[in-house]
Picture (cartoon, rainbow, N blue to C red):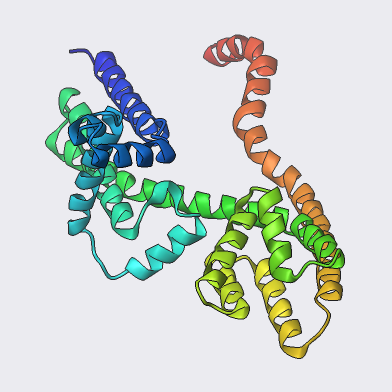
Length: 309
C-alpha cells in the first residue's frame, strides 16, 4: 500500500468518526409528550411494551447508550483527584453535550487511544524505524489527550465572551422591567422569556435555584462562581449589597447598565487596537512570502547564473 493511500485512509477514517459523532449528537430525539401518551396507552393494554420500545430511533436505543457506556468504562482509568475542578470547568462551559466529569475523563482517554492508534498505524505502514514509531505514537497519545482539554477551554472562553457581550443589554432590559413595576425576580423571568443566550440560561438556573429554596443572594453568588466573569461578579456583589442595605434596585440597575455599556465600549476599542498586531502573523507567514516570490522570482535564475560564473 502506498504512502498516499495510507494517509488518505487515515483522513477518511477521522472524518467518518467526526460525522458519526455529529450524527449521534444531533439526531432528532423523540417527542416527550408523545412518548408519555404512548406509555399510558401501553399500560392500558392497547400497545405492547416491546412495540413501544422499538418506536425509538436506533441511535437512541443502541448507538448512544453504547458510546456512553464505552466512555464511562474508559473513565475508570482516569485519576479522580480533579473531579471537582473538572465539574467547575464543565459548568463554565455550559455543560456541553451533557458531559459529566466522568464522561469527559473517559472522552480524553478514548481520544488519546484513538490518536495513538491512528499514528501507530500510519507510521508502521510507512515502514519507519521502531524508535520513530514509538516517538510518533507517544506524540499522538499526548495530542489526543490534550485536544479535548483545548476544546473545553475554547468553549469556556467563548461562553464567557458571550456573557460579557450580552450583559449590558440584559441589564437595560432588567432596568426597564423594574421601572415598569415588576420585582427583580419577575424581571429576570421576563428576560429569560424574551431572550435566549448564555446569560439568560444562567438567569434561568438562578430562578430554578430560588424556587428550590435558596435565597436570592445565594443563587446570585452561585451564578458568579459558575460563570467566573469579572463584570458579572461585580454586578452580583452590588445587587446583593443593595438588597442588604435596602437601596433602590431600579437606580442600582440603571447605574450598572451605564457602567457596563461604557466597559463594553472600552473593550471594543481595546480589541480594535490589538487588531494590527494580530494581523502581523498572517502578513509575515502568508502574504510577504507570496510577494517575495512574485517580485523576486523572475530575478532568481539570473542571480544563480551570475553566482555560478
